[in-house]
Length: 77
Image (cartoon, helix red, strand yellow):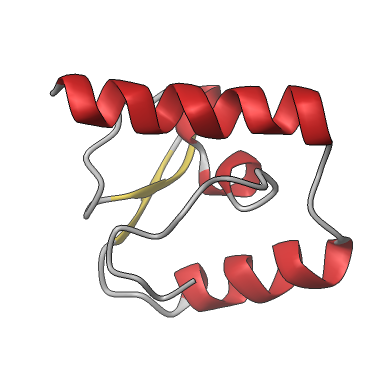
C-alpha cells in the first residue's frame, strides 16, 4: 500500500513540477486506456481497475494520462 502511495505522490508532484506531458503523448495514453479491459467508467470519471487507486479526480484517467511520471501498471505506456 505504501508503494502505491509513493507512486501516486510522485506522479502528482511531477504534474506540478514538470507540467503536462505533450498533448500527443497524453492522447496516445488515453486512447490506450480506452481500449483496455481494466478501464472502469463511473459517474465521477474513468479509472484504472488494474492500479486500484482510490476513485477521486487525481486518479481519473483523464488526469493521470497527463502526468509525466505516471505509468500504466500493465506497462501499456
